[in-house]
Length: 264
Image (cartoon, rainbow, N blue to C red; front, side):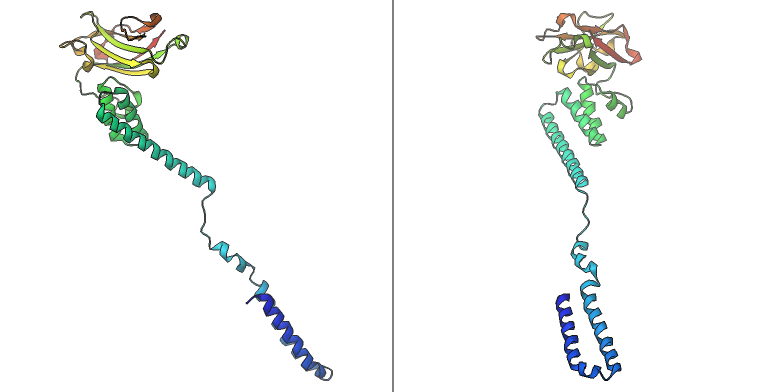
């Protein structure tokens, strides 16, 4: 029952009471005081029921559970969606590598993706396969304890190859980069060769015994080598595109140091 109904009822009661008591008011002051004493509390009670609890109309609002700010909720949903997308991509990549386990670049991408998801053990396992196929990454190598791990035992050469700004417009993504090592005192042919797409530049690389070009001739069989990085077009490793290549000084394999080569 609404407060307005109660007020109307009380007012009508007071008026009716007044009509009955009015004839007596002229002769009895005490009765007048009694009427006032009864009417005022009744009116006050009616007003209190309508106005005395202003928060009552807000009860429905108070019962609504607290909501996260719209921006916070949206950011959380976006973050969860992003993690889900990366996880889905990683699982798809892992599936493709089961069918094509010799794809060195994909192994490295998988290792980096696992690292992004904080799956350290999986990242190291994938990087070990990438390293065995000639891939090198400084951050993953550091994660592995600063040592590039690879199934192939023996010597290894690792480093980075990039293009100088002056030749970046010459090289196309479809060109090929050959990275190879030749022994100072050995056969004329390279003793370890790695082939990569120019679109991957700058390239982290690793040369080891698994990339031997001649059966029975390994990188570990020699003490000194020269490393060359050459850009080619058409797949002929013997012809550098417009002479674009970088060549190291003589490398002592025992030093196991990181090389930085710039093609210009």
